[in-house]
Image 1 (tube, helix red, strand yellow):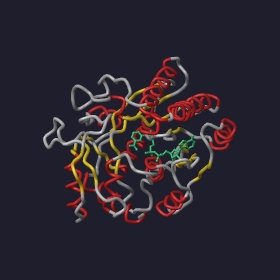
Image 2 (cartoon, protein in one colour; image 1 turned 60 degrees about the vertical axis):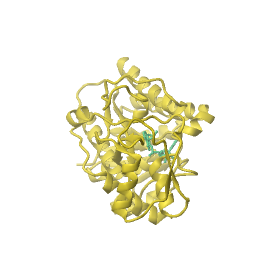
Image 3 (spheres, helix red, strand yellow; image 1 turned 30 degrees about the vertical axis):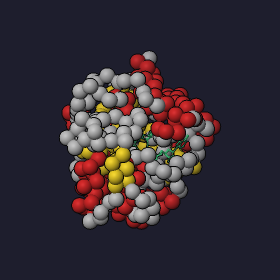
Image 4 (cartoon, protein in one colour; image 1 turned 120 degrees about the vertical axis):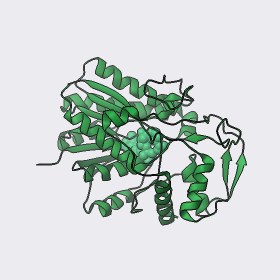
Length: 339
Ligand SMILES: NC(=O)c1ccc[n+]([C@@H]2O[C@H](COP(=O)([O-])OP(=O)(O)OC[C@H]3O[C@@H](n4cnc5c(N)ncnc54)[C@H](O)[C@@H]3O)[C@@H](O)[C@H]2O)c1
Protein backbone atom coordinates (compact mmCIF):
# COMPACT_ATOMS: atom_id res chain seq x y z
CA UNK A 1 0.00 0.00 0.00
CA UNK A 2 1.32 3.49 -0.84
CA UNK A 3 2.04 5.36 2.39
CA UNK A 4 -0.22 8.31 3.14
CA UNK A 5 1.50 11.64 2.71
CA UNK A 6 1.39 14.14 5.55
CA UNK A 7 2.34 17.75 4.85
CA UNK A 8 4.49 19.05 7.68
CA UNK A 9 4.75 22.84 7.65
CA UNK A 10 7.76 23.99 9.66
CA UNK A 11 9.10 20.45 9.32
CA UNK A 12 12.73 21.56 9.56
CA UNK A 13 12.09 23.17 12.95
CA UNK A 14 12.63 21.70 16.39
CA UNK A 15 9.35 19.85 16.93
CA UNK A 16 8.60 19.46 13.21
CA UNK A 17 11.82 17.59 12.43
CA UNK A 18 11.30 15.11 15.27
CA UNK A 19 7.72 14.61 14.13
CA UNK A 20 8.95 13.89 10.60
CA UNK A 21 10.97 11.01 12.07
CA UNK A 22 8.00 9.73 14.08
CA UNK A 23 5.69 9.93 11.06
CA UNK A 24 8.14 8.09 8.80
CA UNK A 25 8.68 5.41 11.42
CA UNK A 26 4.91 5.00 11.76
CA UNK A 27 4.59 4.35 8.00
CA UNK A 28 3.53 7.79 6.74
CA UNK A 29 5.36 9.78 4.11
CA UNK A 30 6.16 13.22 5.50
CA UNK A 31 6.46 16.13 3.08
CA UNK A 32 8.18 19.19 4.55
CA UNK A 33 7.41 22.81 3.77
CA UNK A 34 9.78 25.25 5.45
CA UNK A 35 11.25 28.65 4.63
CA UNK A 36 14.15 28.11 7.05
CA UNK A 37 13.37 31.41 8.73
CA UNK A 38 14.10 29.73 12.06
CA UNK A 39 15.91 26.54 11.07
CA UNK A 40 18.76 25.28 8.93
CA UNK A 41 18.67 23.13 5.79
CA UNK A 42 21.32 20.94 7.51
CA UNK A 43 18.45 19.48 9.56
CA UNK A 44 17.35 17.76 6.35
CA UNK A 45 20.74 15.95 6.28
CA UNK A 46 20.13 14.82 9.84
CA UNK A 47 16.71 13.49 8.84
CA UNK A 48 18.22 11.65 5.89
CA UNK A 49 20.84 10.06 8.14
CA UNK A 50 18.20 8.91 10.66
CA UNK A 51 15.72 7.62 8.09
CA UNK A 52 18.19 6.36 5.48
CA UNK A 53 16.41 8.27 2.79
CA UNK A 54 15.70 11.73 1.57
CA UNK A 55 12.55 13.39 2.96
CA UNK A 56 10.55 15.30 0.39
CA UNK A 57 10.85 18.98 1.13
CA UNK A 58 9.93 22.36 -0.29
CA UNK A 59 11.84 25.50 0.56
CA UNK A 60 8.91 27.93 0.53
CA UNK A 61 7.04 30.39 2.69
CA UNK A 62 3.68 28.99 3.79
CA UNK A 63 2.22 32.43 3.10
CA UNK A 64 3.03 32.12 -0.58
CA UNK A 65 -0.34 31.17 -2.04
CA UNK A 66 0.96 30.22 -5.50
CA UNK A 67 3.78 28.06 -4.12
CA UNK A 68 1.47 26.38 -1.58
CA UNK A 69 -1.12 25.74 -4.29
CA UNK A 70 1.60 23.97 -6.30
CA UNK A 71 2.52 21.83 -3.31
CA UNK A 72 -1.12 20.85 -2.77
CA UNK A 73 -1.55 19.94 -6.42
CA UNK A 74 1.67 17.94 -6.61
CA UNK A 75 1.40 16.08 -3.32
CA UNK A 76 -2.18 14.83 -2.64
CA UNK A 77 -1.65 14.72 1.10
CA UNK A 78 -3.92 12.88 3.53
CA UNK A 79 -3.38 15.49 6.21
CA UNK A 80 -1.38 18.44 7.46
CA UNK A 81 0.52 19.13 10.64
CA UNK A 82 0.92 22.88 10.91
CA UNK A 83 4.03 23.80 12.92
CA UNK A 84 5.17 26.78 10.87
CA UNK A 85 4.92 29.89 13.02
CA UNK A 86 7.05 32.55 14.61
CA UNK A 87 7.51 31.57 18.24
CA UNK A 88 9.69 34.00 20.20
CA UNK A 89 7.49 35.46 22.93
CA UNK A 90 9.75 38.47 23.57
CA UNK A 91 10.07 39.35 19.89
CA UNK A 92 6.30 39.11 19.52
CA UNK A 93 5.91 41.94 22.05
CA UNK A 94 8.24 44.12 19.97
CA UNK A 95 6.95 43.08 16.54
CA UNK A 96 3.31 42.06 17.02
CA UNK A 97 2.39 42.40 13.36
CA UNK A 98 5.09 39.95 12.28
CA UNK A 99 3.46 37.42 14.61
CA UNK A 100 -0.15 38.10 13.68
CA UNK A 101 0.76 38.10 9.99
CA UNK A 102 2.82 34.92 9.98
CA UNK A 103 0.90 32.83 12.47
CA UNK A 104 -2.64 33.71 11.40
CA UNK A 105 -2.10 34.00 7.64
CA UNK A 106 -0.33 30.65 7.30
CA UNK A 107 -3.21 28.92 9.06
CA UNK A 108 -5.92 30.73 7.09
CA UNK A 109 -4.25 29.94 3.78
CA UNK A 110 -4.13 26.25 4.69
CA UNK A 111 -7.81 26.31 5.67
CA UNK A 112 -8.64 27.91 2.32
CA UNK A 113 -6.58 25.44 0.31
CA UNK A 114 -7.68 22.30 2.15
CA UNK A 115 -11.26 22.10 0.77
CA UNK A 116 -10.05 23.06 -2.73
CA UNK A 117 -7.79 20.00 -2.75
CA UNK A 118 -10.00 17.66 -0.73
CA UNK A 119 -7.59 17.61 2.24
CA UNK A 120 -9.59 17.16 5.42
CA UNK A 121 -7.20 16.51 8.28
CA UNK A 122 -5.30 19.17 10.21
CA UNK A 123 -3.23 19.02 13.37
CA UNK A 124 -2.40 22.42 14.80
CA UNK A 125 0.49 23.32 17.15
CA UNK A 126 -1.06 25.13 20.07
CA UNK A 127 0.42 25.77 23.47
CA UNK A 128 -0.32 25.60 27.17
CA UNK A 129 0.33 29.33 27.10
CA UNK A 130 -3.39 29.70 26.34
CA UNK A 131 -4.09 28.79 29.99
CA UNK A 132 -1.95 31.58 31.47
CA UNK A 133 -1.52 30.95 35.22
CA UNK A 134 -4.46 28.65 35.90
CA UNK A 135 -6.25 28.73 39.22
CA UNK A 136 -6.29 24.95 39.61
CA UNK A 137 -3.64 22.39 38.72
CA UNK A 138 -3.24 20.20 36.80
CA UNK A 139 -4.92 21.94 33.88
CA UNK A 140 -7.54 20.06 31.93
CA UNK A 141 -8.76 21.03 28.47
CA UNK A 142 -11.83 22.45 30.23
CA UNK A 143 -9.70 24.92 32.17
CA UNK A 144 -10.70 28.35 30.87
CA UNK A 145 -8.23 30.05 28.59
CA UNK A 146 -6.99 33.35 30.02
CA UNK A 147 -6.19 36.54 28.12
CA UNK A 148 -2.86 36.05 26.42
CA UNK A 149 0.23 37.60 27.95
CA UNK A 150 1.93 38.21 24.58
CA UNK A 151 1.00 38.65 20.92
CA UNK A 152 2.56 35.20 20.33
CA UNK A 153 0.26 33.63 22.91
CA UNK A 154 -2.66 35.49 21.46
CA UNK A 155 -1.96 34.05 17.99
CA UNK A 156 -2.30 30.55 19.44
CA UNK A 157 -5.68 31.34 21.01
CA UNK A 158 -6.90 33.08 17.84
CA UNK A 159 -5.72 30.21 15.63
CA UNK A 160 -7.61 27.73 17.83
CA UNK A 161 -10.71 29.92 17.45
CA UNK A 162 -10.31 30.18 13.68
CA UNK A 163 -10.21 26.39 13.38
CA UNK A 164 -13.16 25.98 15.78
CA UNK A 165 -15.23 28.48 13.80
CA UNK A 166 -14.42 26.86 10.44
CA UNK A 167 -15.50 23.47 11.77
CA UNK A 168 -18.63 25.02 13.32
CA UNK A 169 -19.44 26.42 9.89
CA UNK A 170 -19.35 22.85 8.60
CA UNK A 171 -16.31 23.27 6.46
CA UNK A 172 -15.08 19.79 5.55
CA UNK A 173 -12.24 19.98 8.07
CA UNK A 174 -11.30 17.55 10.81
CA UNK A 175 -8.86 19.21 13.13
CA UNK A 176 -7.06 18.74 16.41
CA UNK A 177 -5.20 21.42 18.34
CA UNK A 178 -2.45 20.00 20.51
CA UNK A 179 -1.60 22.21 23.45
CA UNK A 180 2.04 21.46 24.06
CA UNK A 181 3.57 21.86 27.47
CA UNK A 182 7.38 22.32 27.53
CA UNK A 183 9.18 20.33 24.84
CA UNK A 184 12.86 19.63 25.50
CA UNK A 185 15.44 17.04 24.42
CA UNK A 186 16.54 15.85 21.03
CA UNK A 187 16.59 12.70 18.92
CA UNK A 188 18.87 10.19 20.75
CA UNK A 189 21.09 9.97 17.63
CA UNK A 190 22.01 13.67 18.10
CA UNK A 191 21.45 14.09 14.36
CA UNK A 192 18.61 16.56 14.90
CA UNK A 193 17.71 18.87 17.78
CA UNK A 194 16.85 22.44 18.66
CA UNK A 195 18.86 25.25 17.06
CA UNK A 196 18.24 28.33 19.19
CA UNK A 197 19.00 31.70 17.65
CA UNK A 198 20.44 34.51 19.74
CA UNK A 199 20.14 34.38 23.51
CA UNK A 200 17.79 31.51 24.39
CA UNK A 201 14.73 32.61 26.36
CA UNK A 202 13.91 29.06 27.47
CA UNK A 203 15.56 27.32 30.40
CA UNK A 204 16.96 24.20 28.73
CA UNK A 205 18.57 25.80 25.66
CA UNK A 206 20.17 28.39 27.96
CA UNK A 207 21.32 25.74 30.42
CA UNK A 208 22.89 23.75 27.57
CA UNK A 209 24.91 26.78 26.48
CA UNK A 210 26.10 27.25 30.06
CA UNK A 211 27.05 23.58 30.27
CA UNK A 212 29.04 23.86 27.05
CA UNK A 213 30.86 26.98 28.26
CA UNK A 214 29.21 29.38 25.80
CA UNK A 215 27.63 31.29 28.68
CA UNK A 216 29.05 31.91 32.12
CA UNK A 217 26.17 31.12 34.44
CA UNK A 218 22.51 30.27 34.53
CA UNK A 219 20.08 32.59 36.30
CA UNK A 220 17.25 30.88 38.13
CA UNK A 221 14.50 33.43 37.76
CA UNK A 222 12.71 33.53 41.10
CA UNK A 223 13.09 31.29 44.15
CA UNK A 224 10.23 32.74 46.16
CA UNK A 225 7.36 31.17 44.26
CA UNK A 226 4.74 29.22 46.14
CA UNK A 227 6.27 25.85 45.13
CA UNK A 228 8.10 23.24 47.26
CA UNK A 229 11.59 24.61 46.46
CA UNK A 230 10.48 28.13 45.53
CA UNK A 231 11.36 27.85 41.83
CA UNK A 232 8.92 27.76 38.92
CA UNK A 233 7.36 24.49 37.82
CA UNK A 234 6.76 23.31 34.25
CA UNK A 235 5.71 20.09 32.56
CA UNK A 236 8.76 19.14 30.47
CA UNK A 237 8.06 16.65 27.71
CA UNK A 238 10.65 14.85 25.58
CA UNK A 239 10.35 16.13 22.02
CA UNK A 240 10.21 12.54 20.70
CA UNK A 241 7.20 11.86 22.93
CA UNK A 242 5.63 15.06 21.65
CA UNK A 243 6.38 13.89 18.10
CA UNK A 244 4.57 10.61 18.83
CA UNK A 245 1.51 12.56 19.98
CA UNK A 246 1.25 14.00 16.46
CA UNK A 247 1.22 10.53 14.96
CA UNK A 248 -1.60 9.59 17.35
CA UNK A 249 -3.53 12.72 16.35
CA UNK A 250 -3.07 12.08 12.62
CA UNK A 251 -4.21 8.48 13.08
CA UNK A 252 -7.33 9.57 14.93
CA UNK A 253 -8.21 12.10 12.22
CA UNK A 254 -7.66 9.87 9.19
CA UNK A 255 -9.85 7.19 10.75
CA UNK A 256 -12.72 9.60 11.54
CA UNK A 257 -15.93 9.33 9.57
CA UNK A 258 -17.31 12.78 10.39
CA UNK A 259 -16.73 15.42 7.74
CA UNK A 260 -16.32 18.20 10.28
CA UNK A 261 -14.62 17.59 13.61
CA UNK A 262 -12.59 19.57 16.12
CA UNK A 263 -10.99 18.74 19.43
CA UNK A 264 -8.22 19.98 21.71
CA UNK A 265 -5.73 17.90 23.71
CA UNK A 266 -3.10 18.70 26.30
CA UNK A 267 0.23 17.14 25.47
CA UNK A 268 2.47 16.90 28.51
CA UNK A 269 3.69 14.27 30.96
CA UNK A 270 1.20 15.15 33.69
CA UNK A 271 4.06 15.88 36.06
CA UNK A 272 5.64 19.19 36.97
CA UNK A 273 9.36 19.66 37.60
CA UNK A 274 10.91 22.70 39.23
CA UNK A 275 13.86 24.62 37.81
CA UNK A 276 16.10 23.31 40.58
CA UNK A 277 14.95 19.74 40.02
CA UNK A 278 15.74 20.08 36.33
CA UNK A 279 19.21 21.49 37.07
CA UNK A 280 19.93 18.70 39.57
CA UNK A 281 18.74 16.03 37.14
CA UNK A 282 20.90 17.49 34.37
CA UNK A 283 23.95 17.49 36.64
CA UNK A 284 23.32 13.93 37.80
CA UNK A 285 22.69 12.27 34.45
CA UNK A 286 25.42 14.09 32.58
CA UNK A 287 28.02 14.31 35.36
CA UNK A 288 28.40 18.07 34.92
CA UNK A 289 28.34 20.82 37.52
CA UNK A 290 26.33 23.79 36.33
CA UNK A 291 27.24 27.27 37.49
CA UNK A 292 23.98 28.95 38.44
CA UNK A 293 22.74 31.74 40.66
CA UNK A 294 19.39 32.79 42.02
CA UNK A 295 17.88 35.91 40.46
CA UNK A 296 14.67 37.90 40.40
CA UNK A 297 11.43 36.65 38.93
CA UNK A 298 11.10 37.44 35.23
CA UNK A 299 8.11 39.59 34.26
CA UNK A 300 5.48 37.55 32.47
CA UNK A 301 6.62 34.19 33.89
CA UNK A 302 3.96 32.13 35.58
CA UNK A 303 4.54 30.24 38.81
CA UNK A 304 3.58 26.75 37.79
CA UNK A 305 1.74 24.69 35.25
CA UNK A 306 1.42 21.02 34.39
CA UNK A 307 -1.03 19.04 32.36
CA UNK A 308 -3.89 16.78 33.21
CA UNK A 309 -3.34 14.13 30.56
CA UNK A 310 -6.50 12.09 31.10
CA UNK A 311 -8.09 13.27 27.86
CA UNK A 312 -5.04 12.67 25.65
CA UNK A 313 -4.49 9.26 27.22
CA UNK A 314 -8.09 8.22 26.54
CA UNK A 315 -8.81 10.12 23.36
CA UNK A 316 -5.50 9.77 21.53
CA UNK A 317 -4.23 6.63 23.25
CA UNK A 318 -1.10 8.67 23.91
CA UNK A 319 1.22 8.40 26.88
CA UNK A 320 4.78 9.59 27.29
CA UNK A 321 7.54 6.99 27.40
CA UNK A 322 10.65 9.04 28.12
CA UNK A 323 11.79 10.61 31.39
CA UNK A 324 13.14 14.04 32.25
CA UNK A 325 16.56 12.37 32.62
CA UNK A 326 16.28 10.88 29.10
CA UNK A 327 15.42 14.29 27.68
CA UNK A 328 18.33 16.00 29.43
CA UNK A 329 20.79 13.33 28.31
CA UNK A 330 19.60 13.54 24.72
CA UNK A 331 19.66 17.34 24.79
CA UNK A 332 23.23 17.35 26.08
CA UNK A 333 24.38 14.87 23.42
CA UNK A 334 22.93 17.21 20.76
CA UNK A 335 24.45 20.31 22.37
CA UNK A 336 27.90 18.74 22.36
CA UNK A 337 27.51 18.13 18.66
CA UNK A 338 26.54 21.70 17.80
CA UNK A 339 28.90 23.52 20.19
N1 LIG B 1 8.99 24.93 21.28
C1 LIG B 1 8.06 25.18 22.15
O1 LIG B 1 8.33 25.34 23.34
C2 LIG B 1 6.61 25.28 21.73
C3 LIG B 1 5.59 25.25 22.72
C4 LIG B 1 4.26 25.35 22.33
C5 LIG B 1 3.94 25.50 20.98
N2 LIG B 1 4.94 25.54 20.05
C6 LIG B 1 4.57 25.70 18.64
O2 LIG B 1 5.02 24.57 17.93
C7 LIG B 1 5.37 24.94 16.61
C8 LIG B 1 6.77 24.48 16.32
O3 LIG B 1 7.64 25.02 17.29
P1 LIG B 1 9.21 24.78 17.24
O4 LIG B 1 9.71 24.91 18.63
O5 LIG B 1 9.50 23.55 16.48
O6 LIG B 1 9.67 26.07 16.44
P2 LIG B 1 10.76 26.24 15.31
O7 LIG B 1 10.96 27.69 15.09
O8 LIG B 1 11.94 25.39 15.59
O9 LIG B 1 10.01 25.61 14.04
C9 LIG B 1 9.13 26.34 13.24
C10 LIG B 1 9.56 26.13 11.81
O10 LIG B 1 8.64 26.83 10.97
C11 LIG B 1 9.38 27.52 9.98
N3 LIG B 1 8.54 28.64 9.55
C12 LIG B 1 8.12 29.71 10.27
N4 LIG B 1 7.33 30.50 9.52
C13 LIG B 1 7.25 29.92 8.29
C14 LIG B 1 6.58 30.24 7.09
N5 LIG B 1 5.83 31.34 6.97
N6 LIG B 1 6.71 29.40 6.04
C15 LIG B 1 7.47 28.28 6.12
N7 LIG B 1 8.12 27.91 7.24
C16 LIG B 1 8.01 28.73 8.31
C17 LIG B 1 10.70 27.90 10.63
O11 LIG B 1 11.75 28.10 9.70
C18 LIG B 1 10.96 26.68 11.51
O12 LIG B 1 11.70 25.69 10.82
C19 LIG B 1 5.17 26.45 16.52
O13 LIG B 1 3.90 26.69 15.98
C20 LIG B 1 5.24 26.88 17.96
O14 LIG B 1 4.52 28.07 18.17
C21 LIG B 1 6.26 25.43 20.40
